Image (cartoon, rainbow, N blue to C red):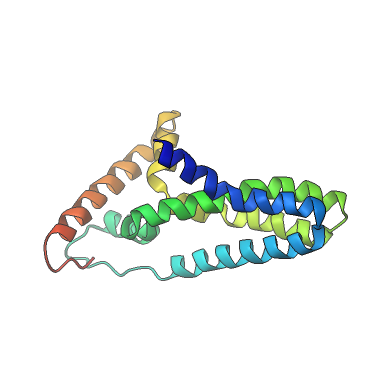
Length: 169
């Protein structure tokens, strides 16, 4: 439990640590933050575009849609969850950065953060769909119940395939 708490604090340390640095050296920290956030977001979009092509004989059409939509979370479950946490750390730290950029009249940097905040929202959900869909269902949004149950079913099938040889999607 303590390890999980320390890990989550560390994941938010980079964006907020850069913000503290920005209070003393705003231009250098601004470029560093934008480059790191841009490269990380770009990397996630790039790997998200490489979707698998599941066998239509083994999977139903609904399952194929779910596999293609959430392929990173299904293939790299722990890594995708961590990347979602890092990405959300950058996204929510952007609110503080936005205030600093607007106060310092750094308009293009502020515009980048607004665009990046909304552009990376969808990939954050696709990286950790079990959490986000589970939260939606718990809050009463029942339209996501079928998608969550289908996602859990696919995950269980893939975990069984990993245990046996010839584990292709």
